[in-house]
Image (tube, rainbow, N blue to C red; front, side):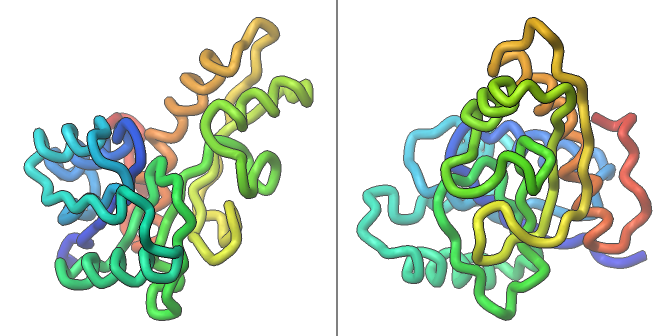
Length: 202
């Protein structure tokens, strides 16, 4: 059996995906281990979740003194120092410059069916509000490889859900997030060429 992949998870907020991945790894449902959490903000809930899961954390440039290139170089240096082979962006809200040696190994989850409702400024409830304003009948989430364009790169997994007539951005966000919890581990398993991830675990 192949050794588990070693993940670094980049976060900026609540860390709900981080918590889910940590649980799946602990239960043996994810073909990877979480070795490092990098946050670009201090005092966020994601850091508390990482501490409870006993995952090493690093808060990097919370005062925004580094430009994007310097921040990204420091982040990937930390990832490599811990021997990680995959980076997951889970609610990470800072531009990341991907080194060429990391092409095809950085994964993001986005709360829409890309290429629709993606790009700079499309995150969180902004996405769901735009979906509702457009009058869409379906929406969903996308797990994709990250390159140097916002919400761009090869799609690994997409999952969809209906948009209900009485939805608000908050209710739609909750329905989409339920799909994200399945899509992210599924996308990682596809990237790694591992057996299909089982939805029944979440």
